[in-house]
Image 1: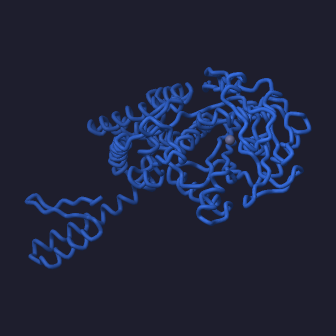
Image 2 (image 1 turned 180 degrees about the vertical axis):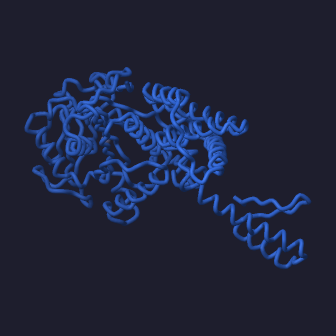
Length: 465
Ligand SMILES: [Zn+2]
């Protein structure tokens, strides 16, 4: 039985999908106007791993993650750069896929973009106008009338009266009430726009996720996920407009990940304290970043620091070393027969993750198994080592998206071998007193950042960073 914390009910609940055996899941994706940072990597990594776990537990998962490709930030950035907003968005969607791939995140089943769903958005807004939940202003804006929706505030736990205190109508807005939010914005000069029953304009932010999730998953689905910074107003508004229109529960479970903080502050592009995924991947590698994220419970905040990432990099390297040491004994590592010891570990793994996706404990279990693997190798207990290897590399690793050595590590392995060959040949040249050629090898390796150091015990090498 899988239990997850539901933001809507504020407690852990058993996951009972609307359709048996299937989990339909919508994750709010990034607004595409720049390269993704570590803060974006968290929901992507966490919910990708959660999806892998659901599949591991036998569910079929349909996952949708959108791209917001029309928005003030995109328009401003495009104007700054003198490019078309749509081109800018498409560029960063491509860059997103590159980074996500390098992070070991599988594509969702659907990646809808807002501008591909303008018709669905307009239909939805019209539906809300027809039902009396939305109104059109003189200038052609359409607003959702929050007070008409009784359950407003239930998801975020906010009370209408408290919200009123902090809200105000901005100059130029034609809202009836400061709480109302835009479903459709009339076009401003120089902005991209689409024609609608209310004139030229573009969608407000919240309506896109309601329209795209309805189109791809239906008006009622299982899990809506995203960062906790989206609970209010974004998710509260999505829920209000969807339920007002469809008259049925929008998402049954709401999952929210905590924020990654830099010096205690939420990390986001608008605050400027960016740490780009691309840079972090170069310096620390995929497993270090995934371990950094999955070693904390998804609902807790994480404080970002380079030191923690470095620690995770070292930890990942130790695991690789153990796995590779074991792999080197085989042409192909065989699959052991699962016995009670292995099955107990599998049960433990499931129990841990069934409890609100407790990845820190699952990671700890994997590290315990690495200890077992090392111990078994030291004791020449081949059978035990094989069992531990199987669980780390083939059973649990893939669920967490960890220790997939096939790419990043094996390539490095080849380079290492080539360097060793050159160092060997150089030693032989030195023995034969062919110092010119030996020095040339040293100098040319140095030119590509490989530094050789001769001592009485032989030659060692290191890579200049
Ligand atoms: Zn959304």
